Image 1: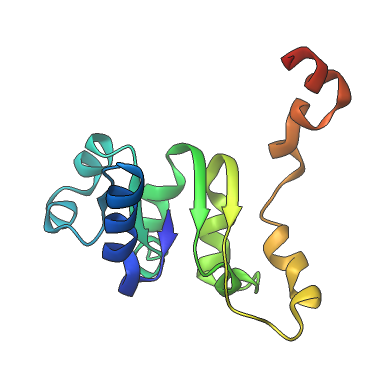
Image 2 (image 1 turned 180 degrees about the horizontal axis):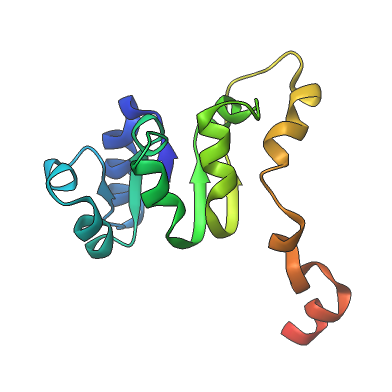
Length: 136
């Protein structure tokens, strides 16, 4: 999960208390000491979007494969020129969930930029009627 740095600890606590999911976080000092080892040991992670988009970190996060990526405050990735957008667009994730509770007056005009992170190939066979019937 990518979230603003100010709520990484809150997301970790919520996942633990409400769902019993122990997540690592980029706010943990152990992450700073050994980022790659920390990511290997914590398959579920809440990361600061600001930290993850930095050079070096961006490549680290983009190089890994994820089943699910969640972006909280997704309205922050509405502009394709930003480092946040570029990071989310590079994530190798089977599923992408974009969350925001911030009302945007021109949300419909800005939605295509955020939605463009969902590449056509990420929909793959799941989107076809044949694929749905195969799964039954």
